[in-house]
Image 1 (cartoon, rainbow, N blue to C red):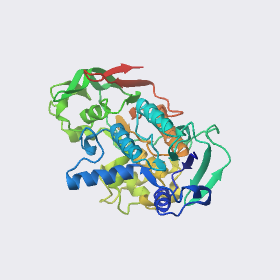
Image 2: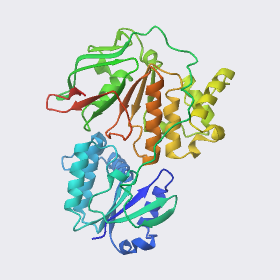
Image 3: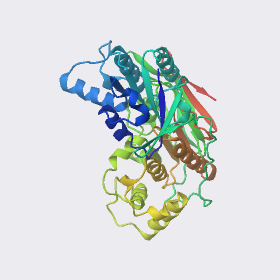
Image 4: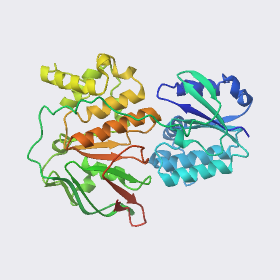
Length: 408
């Protein structure tokens, strides 16, 4: 059985490759798959099935008759894989199968794929080399639209070291002062939704200058915790949760809290689908707006010029944000969350779907934030990113009584 891994970078035309493959426009080296019956294991497939379920009010792939939309990322992928395997295709294209999955789900998925590798061929599209399935013996790469056969795996190639311009993180225009040293304080926090227990007796303190990684299995409560800090989750009220010295629900509005927090998750990028320049994208981080609708001041432009120099994007400042590569967009959005020099910076799975090179650059930028500022950083990720230097980790461990928090 011929199994392939095709390594991607942030400029790879993955959608075009998949579409061509499905319509029989297949690279010469992969012609053996042309007459065969294939399936696609991808977020694209899940999105299509979710739409179909919504339209027809029918559950297509879950044996428990649970709607796909209500499942966690891991549960969705597990249900989709079971559905595709039951159709017994000749091959399955695996589109970054391990993205957004915790370690336990990853190992379970790898085991299932290996069990079926003697009867079904797998073509793995991988942005991260460490995700390469162990049984794969054929290797390729996709650079933009060009497919190339590789003679061997590049899994053990040394990753480049990543650094940023030697200039320091630019100063804040309007620094927030008179804050207590303790910025976030969870005291014996327990959360349930109906009969389902999510968090169990969580104690967690975040101080100025802390650098935390928040990790845990899919469905362990990471999103719930973030929503109680940054969002307006009603479950936070009545709990012993203190933000910037004030008990949650004691009068400070969610907007007052958000002004003191920089936040970025990849889904936010979709909000900026207009014709915004990189310069204006960063300036909008100073004004907390989606896009720039006021004339920037000279001080704002000067500060943003420093950020552009730091990111080595000065020559591209007038270029439209939506023309950048995924890696460049993520760097800009991460910097945008930090331009105010907020007391707290939350980065929610910022390296998901990134290639090794781009993820390494973003990790280097976050490490620079931690080293040069007193902003408290909370980095949420399933992966232990190479080179990331958090001082502490809060690991949420699920149980029937809800997730407990283990601090390492």
